[in-house]
Amino acid sequence: MNRQELVQLIRERKSYLCIGLDTDIHKIPKHLLSHPDPIFAFNKAIIDATKDICVAYKINTAFYECLGIRGWESLQRTVEYIPKEIFTIADAKRGDIGNTSTYYAKTFYETYGFDSVTVAPYMGRDSVEPFLGFSEKWAIVLGLTSNEGSRDVQQLQLDGGFVYEKVMKTTASWGTPDNMMFVVGATKADVVADIRRLLPDHFFLVPGVGAQGGSLKEISEKGMNKEIGLLVNASRAVIYAGNDEKFAEDARAVALQYQAEMAGYIPA
Ligand SMILES: O=C(O)c1cc(=O)[nH]c(=O)n1[C@@H]1O[C@H](COP(=O)(O)O)[C@@H](O)[C@H]1O
Picture 1 (cartoon, helix red, strand yellow):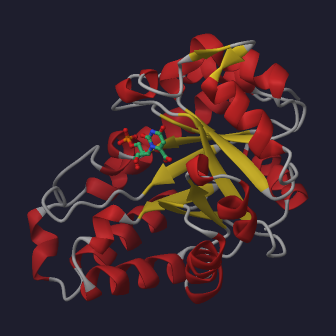
Picture 2 (cartoon, helix red, strand yellow):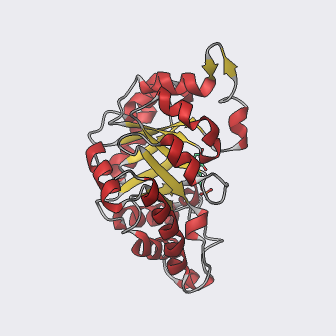
Picture 3 (tube, rainbow, N blue to C red):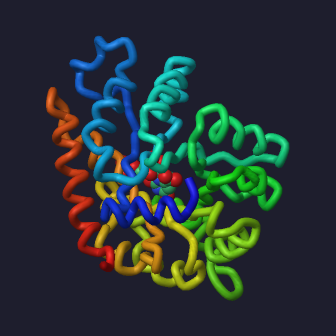
C-alpha cells in the first residue's frame, strides 16, 4: 500500500487506529480452544468485528513464533484474511547484516504479503536498506520506544540531542516518507512535538495507548501532520476487552471508542 492510499483510507474512515493482534493462546476465550486453529478463530472474529473502523492490523510475530509451525500457519491465515485495503504490519523487529536482512524482508513482504515490517536500526544503514527496496512496502523503524528501558540507551544525551533523535534523523536519510515510518511510543507524548518537528513528513506508528497508559489525546494533538501521519496501535485493550462468547463485540465497542475519539482530532 502506498502513502496516498493510506492517507485516503484514514480520511474515509476518520480513523488512524491500528489493532494489535498480540494473540496469546493463554488469554483467548476458552470456548475457542476446541477449534482446529484457535488463534486464527480468535483473530478472524476480531477482524470481522473491527475491519470497518480501523486502518491497520499489527501482528506481533512473537505470539505466533512461540507456537512453532502451527503459529506460523495461524499467522499466514490471519494476514491472508485481512481485507486488502487495510494496512498490515509484521511486528517482528528485524535487522541484521544486509544479506540476512534481505531475506527477512522477503519473508514478510513476499512470502507472507505484509505491507510493512518493524525494523531495529541498531546495526546501521546496510541492515535497514534491504527493507526499503520493495515497491509500496514499508520499514517501520524503532525510534523512541514506549518501554521503561528506552531510557537506557535511546534517551542518553549526546552533543546536540538525544541518541534517539540522532538515530531517527540518520535513519530517515536512508529512505523516504514513502517507504519508512518510525515507532514513537505513546508513553513519550512529552517529546512527540519535538520528534514531529525533526521529521515533519513521516508516518509514526504509535503503540502504548490502552494497557501501557499512553494518552491518545496528547499524541494526536502533538504528533499529527498535514496528512494525519499517525497509526495509533492498541493491542490488549481492544482484543481482550471481553473474555466470553461476545469477546468480538466487546472488542468492537472499545475500538469504536478509540475511532470516535480519533474522528474528533482529524481536521475537516
Ligand atoms: O514496535 C512496536 O509495535 C512496539 C514498540 C514500542 O515501543 N512499544 C510497544 O509496545 N510495541 C508493541 O506494541 C504492542 C503494544 O501492546 P499493548 O500494550 O497491549 O497495546 C505490542 O505488540 C508491543 O510489542
